[in-house]
Amino acid sequence: MILTSSVYKALDLSAETGKKQLAILIDPDKFLESKAESFLSGLPEETTHIFVGGSMVAPDKTESSVRAIKMFSDLPVVLFPGDHTQITEDADALLFLSLISGRNPEYLIEQQVKSVEKLRNSTLEIIPTGYILIDGGAACAVHRVSNTKPISQLEIETIVNTALAGQYSGKKLIYLEAGSGAKFPVSEEIITAVKKAINIPLIVGGAIRTQQLLMKSYDAGADMVVIGTAFEEGSFVT
Image 1 (cartoon, rainbow, N blue to C red):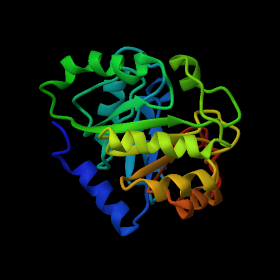
Image 2: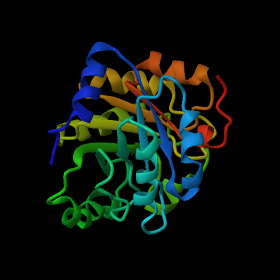
Image 3: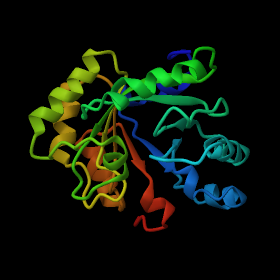
């Protein structure tokens, strides 16, 4: 199923009307299912989505994590998979990611091809997403696993052109990612430049550890911000 459910339509409408979205990213390998209820009860009030995924996840951990989340939350659960094994029918939607900032065919198309057998008759809402890795000042898991280099934050034109190439090739979302463990987030200048160039929703994630950084990303043009490590570690500063 492609774009026939409500997750993308709601996100697209929110982007058009200026209603900002917040996703909390849960890494299944760090998620304690026995504490799902208490963990989810601590989500920020403004949370609109739960993303689930990681660069490397143990077999079946994605499925069990999603099931535990669905028991205690009515928020849309969206898969943010590091590879084709991290797919479960228990989620609501899937970001069908292509790492368009890199040139490794494994993450441009091979992982996508490997996922087709699971997705061919799937009821998941499949959302084509252009994933752009931006240098956040530290090597991140995506960098290591995908064996691709992030784009320097100084190369704004390259980042904008990459985002537009994603849109022109049919992506429905652009995701700018500084990476887990980044020292600094995607700059406001980059966010603004990309948002001005594209006409599809823009997601921004990585190194957003404070309410101030969250608001700066929103003000620069992000339609959705994703917070992962800071919330998992309880270090997000409001």
